[in-house]
Length: 344
Image (cartoon, rainbow, N blue to C red; front, side):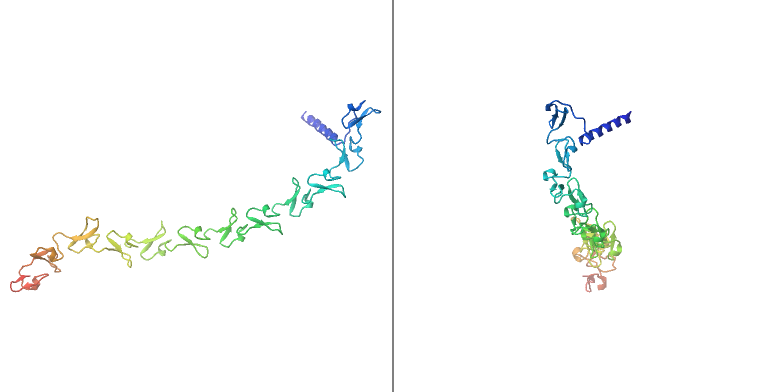
């Protein structure tokens, strides 16, 4: 049932097409007067049928010029497609060639590839020759980063751009997104292509800046490489500057070791035997005199003196001035008065 319906539809379409294109003539309509016929017809009273009026046609056979056919719309003999008597018979992209009475493409227009250059195709929608894919007529047929070669009609990379690695330096690669030469991994164009700890060398490689390190061999003998910061820092017991020392110390620039500031200490061992290390009211560590000890007679009462004789049991303590003596050897830090036999 479905196939039969389709066959009937196809037959009807064929009949309509034949009627439209003048290939099938329907029987002439009977009449007795003109008003019973179509506007382009007249009534033939002898045959009693409607026929084409003078200047009109019913089919191509009614046209005497073989270049013309009967228009199913106007029922007038008009030039068949491609033929013309003037430009009005042609399309807007054509002109009438009077010698052949045929419509031909205007200058710069086309109807097929035969009129175009080898690197062009005819754009049937616009009837203009346009560059084939991968070819160009000017820069506008290329990408924004390309220019058109007028001789080969091929697009090439403009100055500063690239299409492949071969157009870049050996230490560069052509970036497929920006189409610009960029440093390969591990190489650089300037310092901005390197990590902050590195600088770009003359051979376009990122190298460590002088103050940074990869291991201890990059550092001085009194330094070691901090693997977190990649900076050389003082080993334990050494210093780079005073900030590496205690508040009571300074960094010796030659030995790079911390030394106590004058009069300051970090422990009792930093002080003379008659002093101890203590925090003062100013919050600093200083050597102060031990209670009951002295460093000079000024630290003792008027009747006593400070024993400064090495090895004495009373060393750095105040002793009586007038002690009995047989000679100067009995009077540490003074002399023996031989008349009174007492230490001065």
